[in-house]
Image 1 (cartoon, rainbow, N blue to C red):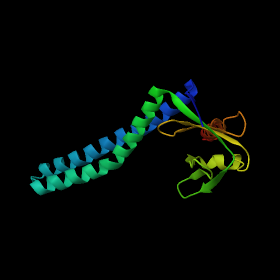
Image 2 (image 1 turned 135 degrees about the vertical axis):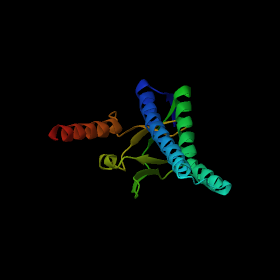
Image 3 (image 1 turned 45 degrees about the vertical axis):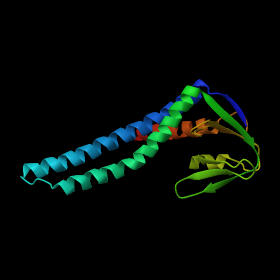
Image 4 (image 1 turned 180 degrees about the horizontal axis):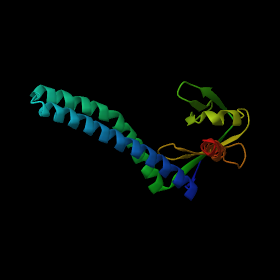
Length: 173
């Protein structure tokens, strides 16, 4: 494992992930506030004043719905710290396996130290498990930045292919 500085492309990749999750959090929060606000507004419009216990139940339910958002926010804080500290870890290994699960695919190392990386399903056919692989991840959040058997970043290759397919589908419509 080698620790180096993040490149501008790496910082851009981490910032993109932060933006996406931040937008999702904002939309979810607004929807929750509107749902609770509209519920109370409609109740008051018809002259029904919820009891004190009802208010507490609604606030408890809203608080429980915010718990997953706190976890997502924590991951965003780690990504933000990665950008500020500007450090990444380069791992070179040959002892790894690719496991497919319901939610996606994992690259799991067999030797020490043990690592588990979430990877795109479209990356799986490009990886050849017995061969030497280089993986770059951000230091704190473990965001996958680079994965390759040589000097070509397979993540960039997969993302470019997905963008090309999306553009072709949009042109057809």
